[in-house]
Image (cartoon, rainbow, N blue to C red):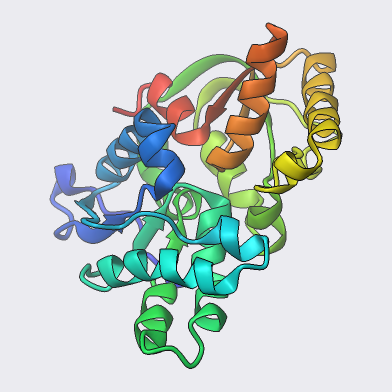
Length: 260
């Protein structure tokens, strides 16, 4: 993944903001628009000039993971071409989508007429919390506060493909009064897995319940992740059972802590 210049603070006479494109993903557009808005605000506070992506839709991951690569390519092509019209880093507030785009688009489009576009776009993709982790000094100066306990869930793609684990925790470390409680199941799959949850619903539900039980046993108020797919799985299950904890995106936690 590409690097991001860090430490820009335009309110104190720093250099002009870096320009980034914020790719909301289809889940962000359809299910979690507030999360996308919170991510945009957070990036702006860090001195980044956030530009929308016009015409982007889905990264093609559901079809790709199910083995339907031609279908995945057809879906992803729309986003590849839309993102090719942007400049600067492409920030993705979804670990699994960022992994799909940065690690699999090149192979998916190998030999295709858009192969070079896919290669160029993939090289510009960076996950949201990884960007914020390069601006910890800015976050610390904001005096963020969220009194309560939290657990952090590592999504499979973000942890095992992007190798991002310390970055979101470092970002959360900038929030005062927030106690981050280690979870025994932090690196365990939530059971979503795209079509896995449809093909094996009983196993999927059991995996989600196991993770939520772990969070409850540690008394956390909120379960945080940087992946909307996991949040949809865990939050949906928590809502169905009518139990705690709340399940929210890291961008939303920062918003509630005062990063606005």
